[in-house]
Image (tube, rainbow, N blue to C red; front, side, top):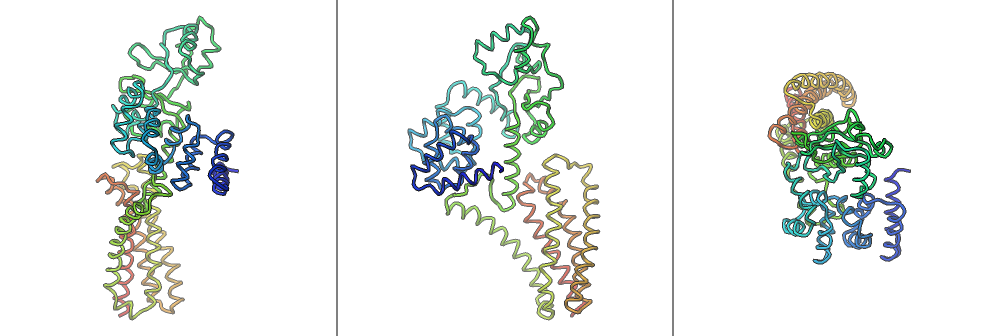
Length: 449
């Protein structure tokens, strides 16, 4: 059984609890025996705000921050806004630098200011170091709590320092010089097994991937994908050790990118709450509905231009959805391919023309193939070769147009620093609808009236 199936069962069990006390008791049992912070966050997101807050309060204190950090932004805010002033201060005081970095974009300024006042001095210093980098740079998100040792010491000295500072069996130790430049990475187990007279620098692992702190998040995550270690050092331009990123961070970032693009297609945000307030959600979704209304009106105007031919040949009204649908699907295929390639930085000035030619070639072949099939079906259906030929022509034109604009639209949007995943599908659908209807109805008006 998959993890998500298990979570569904846990949610169902909690939802069926006889009362609040039994619900909290069941959750406590799950937390003690089964669930980690990420799973608890997903479960709490599945309940209305009042129950969510009550269950969060029942969690062990050491889980409070981790669970809130794992939550989507809107869900986290729903919990924070439900806390009393004292509860909020106690919660903010427990924040570490990485959690505050994760939270700050979604919190009101006054709460961020209060958090900065309450967190420990060490965490505040690490937070300030993170803000030396832009939000979209990997250095901003690196975990700065890493285990370091001078590179020139012996194994005996290393063991003594590890014991003195109570290092809790880290997986890797990062060797640095006096200027904090990274010299190499050593496995903790290798230090434990090495001769005490040996120098730790002789234990350095080979072929270690280093990530420049100024790379973008997506670039950094992509480099981690090809790394040999589960956690990779992040260094500044001069080789200074900034921190590390690990597989957990990479997977979380990739999930957020995927969810953001999935939700963006409908004008929503990946941080949206399942139980967000009705009025606020209505406003958010209403804006997108308004945008779609404008595009639908453009398509309707195009249809209205050929009202006379539609009234004379009713079959055209029956076949119009086929033209729009074929163009829409063909366009979405190209657009999806482009958005993925752009996310992986595979689209360059040098390969755009070749890609455009390739997509138009694919569109031409598919357009001709499906034009013949749909044209034959329409001709037999309505006993009219003219109708068959008209829709066949429209299908070819619309699928080739969809391929052309499926490549062009995301490139143009990216040029204007707009997200192709958010606006691309709406623009492309409008283009294919208008072009498809115009080609279909325009041709019909010439040959049938």
